[in-house]
Length: 375
Image (cartoon, rainbow, N blue to C red; front, side, top):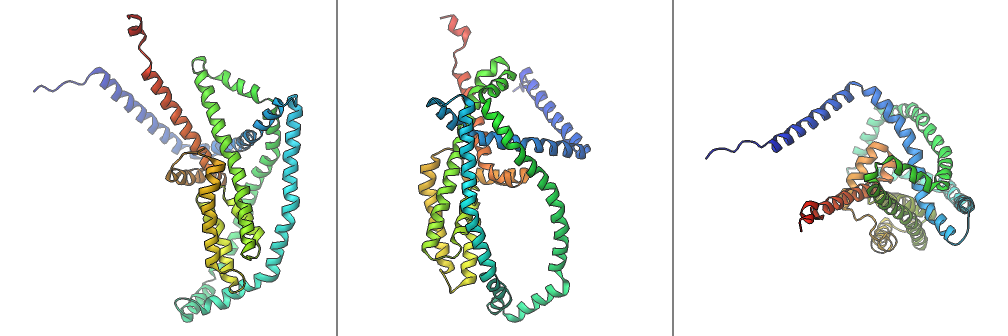
């Protein structure tokens, strides 16, 4: 049987894919050759994206409240914005006013009363209870003293820490200074900025882009608002439960639970380590480590099966494996902020993917105009 020749359509598709592959390889080669230039451009883009993105995310939290006030007749926009700003600043300062003294008190209490117990445990109790025996423990400690591993590590740590403080502190200070200003202008001219952004889009795509933007704002905004409520709720529950079982420094440990809850899956594990470690070292005083572990398992169950469905609903609808991969990927790109915002970024990608699938389905379901006109 004679073999069918390759059609022109197939040949054009092969040439197209080969051209794209060659273009990608050329871009990668150029990126490798000018690595320092790309690093400079990337750092510059990051310095711009960070404050703008934070202002945008905070705006998604506040803008529904501004719209609610305007619907109730509280206007113009400047008045409703001033009320929301004053309310937000008041909540932040009230939180610092009530929370900071408790945290400082418990930290001072720890270093005054319990820190010596930790040192005693590391130098005496750990040696006596070492699973391989006291002789092996002494040899390990002697090796550490002879090689001066800890001393060299501390000597190298201090210069590295001081150098990193300079590189990290400046962007943080700049971001803290710029975010309120960007947020103020973004909320004040929210519709105008949205309209200007739409004007950049070609007219034939404007409707689709507007719909996609609305979906992204709704998904990310709902996630952020729900996550904020969830952090407060689960942190409060943890604080109360820790106090009920008699765990010392319950407020700090509960605060850690609330703050780390923003990190999916890993946050509960991170939050459980400090109270369990403290309970293990301070035993037999206070609740035992097994009880603290059981409490954290119960808190995680409450968070995952009660608070999460009620407060968050099904905002993300993303498989846990995808979220974990997102945490690893965006964390490597953007550091701690990438870990924190990995879930909403993944949710945004899912919204974009589903939206383009819907557009493709709409085009396939539309009747051919030529066929329709012949009827």
